[in-house]
Amino acid sequence: MSSLDVTLLNEATPKRLSAGGWLLFNLRVGGLTFGMGAMTPIFERALVQETRSLTAQEFQETLTLAQVLPGPSLVSLVMYLGQRQFGTLFGLFGVVCLCLPGALWATAENALITLAVTALAGLLYARRILGPMALIAASGLSFALLSFALQHV
Image (cartoon, rainbow, N blue to C red; front, side, top):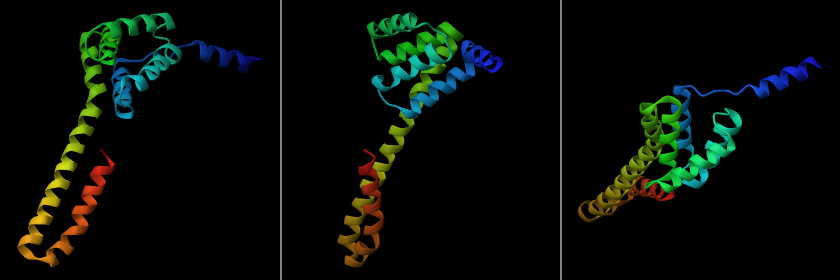
C-alpha cells in the first residue's frame, strides 16, 4: 500500500520547468520538428500533462490567442508562454531557441547545395580543359556531393 501512495504522490507533484529548462525544451523541439502541426501537441503534452504549468483550457485559450495574432502562431505561443512564466527576456530567448535549429539546418543545406553545384561546374570545366582523365578523377566526389545534397532537399 505504501508504494502505491508514493506513486500517486509522485504523479500528483508536477515537474515545473525552470527558465533554463524552458530554453532547452524550445531548442529540442525546434531541432526535432518543423511546422506548427507537429509542435503544438508536444507543447500541450509538456505544459499541460507533464509539468502542469497550464490547464487544458488555459492552453487552448493561449493557442487560440496565438492563432489570432499576426505571424507564425507557434512563435506567438512560445513568446507568450515564456513571458508569462519567466519574463519578456526568456520569452524572446525561447523564440530564438525554437527557430535556431531550423535556421542552422537551412543554412547548412544551402551551403551543401552550393558546394555540390560548384563541384559539378568544376567537373564540367575540368573535362573541357584537361580532358577525360580529369573527368574520371573528379566525377566521384562531385556526384557524391550532388546526390547527398539532393537527398537532403
